[in-house]
Each structure stands twice: as C-alpha cells, then as structure tokens.
Length: 244
Image 1 (cartoon, rainbow, N blue to C red):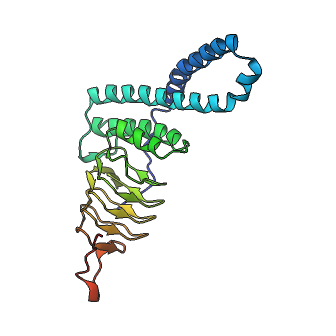
Image 2 (image 1 turned 60 degrees about the vertical axis):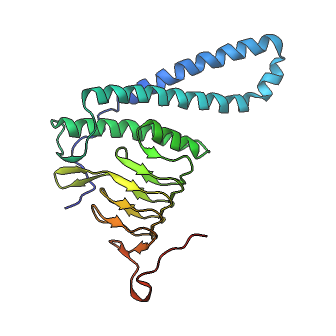
Image 3 (image 1 turned 30 degrees about the vertical axis):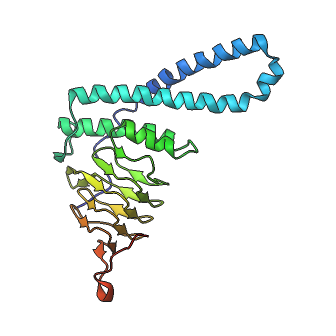
C-alpha cells in the first residue's frame, strides 16, 4: 500500500535551517556594509540610495550562493557518515540509511525551496547540480518537483508544469529508493508522475496527467499516456516520432 501520510517525524533538521541562514546572512552583511562604506566616501549618498534596489538583488544572489555553499558542505559531512544508496529501508530513524536519507532530503528541499523564488530558471538547476542530480543546463524544469537523490536527466529534456520526478516512495512501513533516468530529448507532460526505477528512453513522451509504474521503461521515440502509462496503441500502434 502506498501512503502519503508519514507518522515518522522526518523534519529532524529544523534546528539546522536558522543556522544555515545565519551563516549565509553574516558574510553577505559584511560584504554589503563594506561596499556601502566604500562607495559612500566617493559617491553622493543620494545616488547610492537610488541604486539600492539593484544592490539588494545582487546581495540576495550573494546570500543564496553562500546558502548553497554551506548546505553543500553540510551534505558532504552527511555523506561521510553514510553514503546514499538505493534499496528498500525500514521507515524508522534507527535505520541509518533511512535516517540519513531523510536528513539529506530535508536539507536539499529547504535550499531548493529558497532557490525557487529566484526568477531565473538556471538557479534551480545550479542547486540541483550541486546536490548531485545529473541534469543538463538546457533542461526545462518549469514548476516541476524533482526528488533529492538518484536522478539523471539528459539534454533537451522538458519537464512540464507540476510534473513530479520521484526516485523514492513510501510503501507501507518501508521506503523504496531506486534510480530514475530520463534520457536525452524526452518530454514529461504537465502534472505527470515518474515513479522510482523508471527509465524514459531518448525522445519518449509521457502524456499530460499520466504516471508510470515502478521500474517501468518508456520506449524510445514513442508516446505513452494513461494511469499507468502505456504506449500508444490501436491503428497507430507503431507510431514513431520523427525529428526534423
């Protein structure tokens, strides 16, 4: 049975979030004060105030980069204690594989949620790359959800709005973690769900609102849709997408 409500307390890193924010905000504040003091000597303070909105954007970028740096260092520390791995684990914090999976996921989701507020799409891709997700710079992520571990996304891949890419899933009292591979040029429709273990071959399309089964393979250059997804059948059973 697949459930979404988890009775195990998973937000065990809540105490770490304010520490990461403070560590990131402190050097950002020092940089801000240094340049404000420096420019105030040579430039009229009124001109500095006029450029303050642009300056705040720049310092926000500096802040999230520092946040990403400290989160990455924390993640490296976690991995030194327990490397991430695929498998089926008991949903119990006494299980070290499960415990460190939850810690890594909480950390990554917290940082990526902050990066989502940045208006440029490359920011989210930068965060995902830093956290070990194999993803190309030209991938269109839009407003999609991408799990925290064991995801490989090829070049020219399009993830529709609201799509969900899951490499982990709760099955009763167990947690399943299985690698997901989206090969080059594939398209995941809006509000579609990719289950753990899914392999989407090159050029394959998953229709809007569809979802895959565990360990399902979507064939190359074919259209799939349904719940669960199936290759297009009927008269056009052998329909193959052609590229110009």
